[in-house]
Image (cartoon, rainbow, N blue to C red):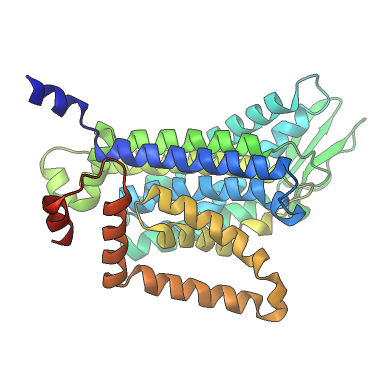
Length: 363
């Protein structure tokens, strides 16, 4: 009877990883908030807090595709741009209402997530029929297509309502105001994103992704990743589960994009180019493919690092590249990985000490 109770109380690895992620994010938020209240956070770092939150959301959401689903996507910045500009349009429409900023931001984030999810679903139908390098190239192309579409979209708000066109000849009505101005992007945006809202959205992203991983659907997605033929042989609809992961990832990217876009007074479509997609992929790879809290740490460090290296002036990005190479070499070194694994075994909660444990760890 006692053994059965112990088995029921045993915590699964998924629950442990989820708890670590929540604790890590919450501790970071509390520490940064306290330091900010004491004036110990520089103005440069204060300006990076919301982008850090947005990039964490992007990294965790991309990990759902790359790490959990096993597909290589290079167009994640396209979904980020859809969420960013959709959120900006929604925020601009509600600007003169009596709605508080937090509620307006929530509406912008929800709309950005929904529209990006729809875009991900429509793109995923043809894209996910491909595999490997072909999939990566096509997602890259779709990301660039989305960016170029944003370059020709004009959105104007006036007393008659909202007007959307691919021609700049709009906005002639009374009280007209351009929300999106083609290649000039969004200008005069009211900044309503906050570090607290970023923290809440990170928790939502972690909740969604980690619950998918620990669900029946998540296990089906990982089964399709590990062996597509075996998954199909037991009746799993591989396309369905791949599309599910891709759509949810795109929706979360749109949510992060809305948070990111409403943190700047102006935003250009060129910001969401191929380099941004690669940067998000670097967060995932450096943190460990399929490793959620690794993506959180990597996104935080690599967002802060370029600014921290600004003192090196012309050699800043060279130093940044060298640091990336050294970290990648270090994390792929078997001896170093074994050392870190052994260290984690010694310090993790609930670790039993004794001869048996040490022997098992050494093995």
